[in-house]
Image (cartoon, rainbow, N blue to C red):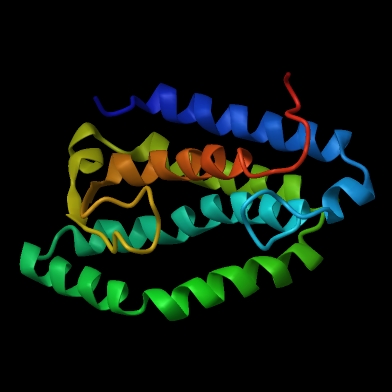
Length: 176
């Protein structure tokens, strides 16, 4: 069953609260420590978790456009993106490492708040029909990208991404 707007928004709010708690409770040494199962530090991984929301904010207009084309056009687009998975992975890794230097613990939470607020404003304008539009997706780019995704799936994606990577932090969970 697809999530409701309310469930999507609740996930956004929980992610914001968890990020704030991790940042408030972590020392500089905690943030510089390696995460579990990635090459990123905890701070870099936290930024990458924020970046998932930034990517979705940028993706939404594209999804609305591509979903209006015939399915073969969307499949060709997704296929072309899948062909670029290796360069995407490199950019994704180094981009998060580099950006975490600017969007450090002092800026990261504000960036997430502004990004989520922008996504929420857009979600408020969506009808059930627009949320149901779908397109083929580059499913090799992310474990939560399916071969076909609805606009609603895209709105729900960053919280799934956030929760997945939260398990890789070598920080104490802020609410346990």
